[in-house]
Length: 493
Image 1 (cartoon, rainbow, N blue to C red):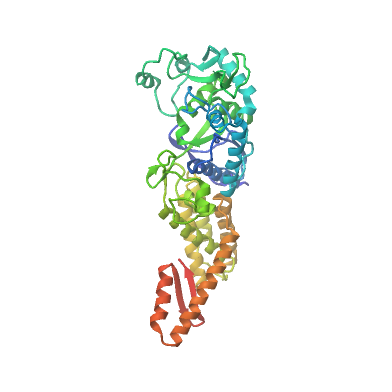
Image 2: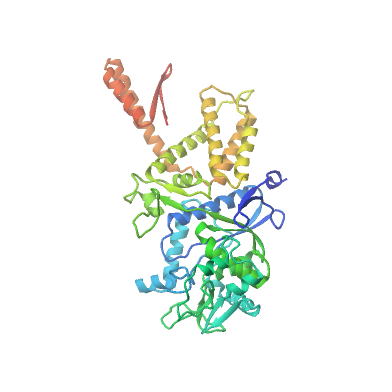
């Protein structure tokens, strides 16, 4: 029996606004699509948080025994600078400013995206399609929508007719917006606009002579609208209806709303059963933005080359920090938060190191089976990683008590504890126990042992002022000395 048959997973569906029991379309199989990056600049930390949330979800579904087809796209065309239907393509603009080919921009920042995600220990998706690789599929969907009367062509551009679509379907059901309210709050269209209504969105845009990225179509040379690529690629690889569609909260409207409309207009039914949205990342209580300078790139955190943080932080520490908040909650990045996460991360890793050397007994003071189910209960409750981490630290407490001979554990419970910690810490949360940490620990141990030796010499010479100074200053750094019959030992808090 697979774990998914034993564990009841509930997830918050943005479409209903409720927590629902997860039931995939096909027994034992999950189809999941997540909106990937627009590759015109270095991937920013907020995007990493979204992708990390879905990497965790992907990991947990696989852990439960599901066979998951995870599709995450690369937007390499069609995303305009103002996220609407006017202006310049983000990639084409970058290419023009740097005087290089658009595909050079795409290549540079796709490589950066993969490098950063690899640093964070992401699992690769099952399929990573590109917008430019699926122009034909996008053209076919446009033809279907035109044929069914939910789109119109003007001067080589094709627009989705939201007002007409809303007569037969419900435009705004994902975001909770009503078309009538949107129309009432919209200014009159400018005289030069091609659209029938302000809410209409582009399926295909005519390429002006200066536009670099262009493809032939039945309506003339042009390029696809931003929303269309995800409909084309998700349905191609996952079917007309699939299980999970994910992305950032900022994509709920208009991007995901438009995806639903396109799919319903072309296929006649809803494309996705469960919509999941990850929340934003702020920094020092404010929205992260390049324009205000309140921004930091992942690589700048890893190297310490920034003016925001006091020191470098490893990818696993940053990942651990992000996992301490529920994926639907706003998370605030700060120096203090990362320092606290680093401390917690090393406590967790030290406990895992100590676990393998614990002495076993005929009795257990720690009910490992009950604790293990609490870990599953946390993840089954809409992937609640902060509650899972709280349970992991409950195990850390017991590991430390067993190490100090204050509690006992049987061989069977110890093996189950090791397996469960490994499953949730490394397999599900995706944390890594880097060898550099072990090297740093060895260096720290050597330095502290030297100070213990100097303290012992000071005590032998009755130089208690120096002895106490060494002990107190180490304590201030979080290093506790413990004097015992067999000498002085230390622990790092």
